[in-house]
View 1 (cartoon, one colour):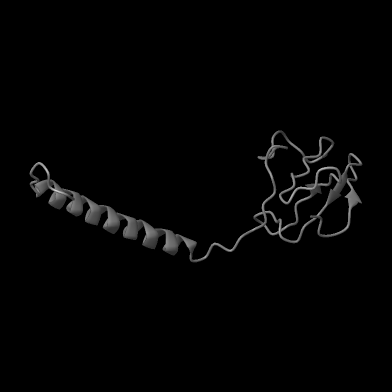
View 2 (cartoon, one colour):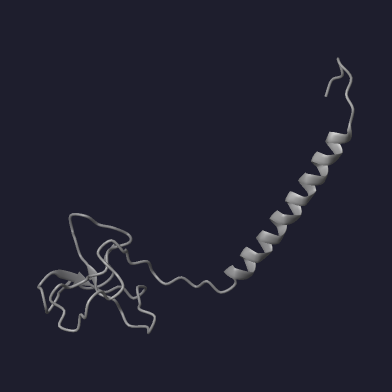
Length: 111
């Protein structure tokens, strides 16, 4: 979904737009390709072939899609907490497996 005005690239004339949520690491808006025939929630970066400042590969290509910046503060802590919890569960299951392995069953016993 396009959030903003559709503009034309001053170097190649292709339709582009800017989204307030798609920013470079320095906080600048990144131009995005506009294609009315293919609306995409994650549009492609506009990698202008006529960009006078382009010096080789700028680190992204047409295959890389633009994903809005996401606030990830606290996610690392949650991942570590979940990782610890998984280790605890695995340890508990291992102990349970060992306990079950020590049980002896006779033919005809029901589980």
